Image (cartoon, rainbow, N blue to C red; front, side):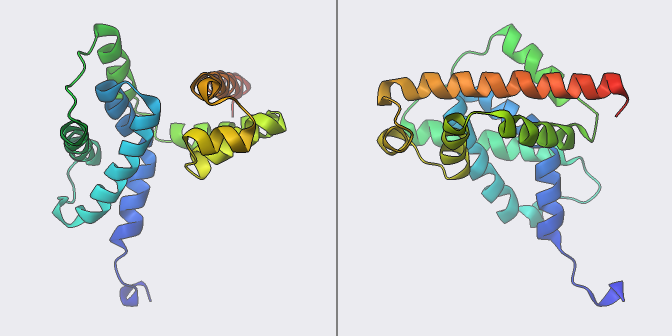
Length: 181
């Protein structure tokens, strides 16, 4: 029966992307040092990976191939924006190496579950901010208007929100590991 099913490379590519999301995003963040821009460039990288999936050699590691694509996306961004690469500090490189060598295959699943739980604990105002910005890609003046946050305070509010979620996610994962989950 499985013989009649078409090979679904799109789904396989999507799983590879999902499993390596944090590592690919870490490379992009290290290169541009702007979380919002990095998220946008990650989305461009996903599109480029799916367009280029036929050039991927089965049996080869996915992450280095995807990293090459993400670097090309960042290079195009720099050219498009007429920007120069930022120098990378040793701390950034050390953190990037730590993230990229993380071999626990279920970490992204644990983070996703923890994120969902942490989002449920947020006050409605912050949950709305998160969903509008990262779920619906609302930015700038429109985001400020829809969340009743001053435009000048949006970046700070988002940074605090991301930090709060990261701390919550880390605590949940740490507690689950200690509990043996």
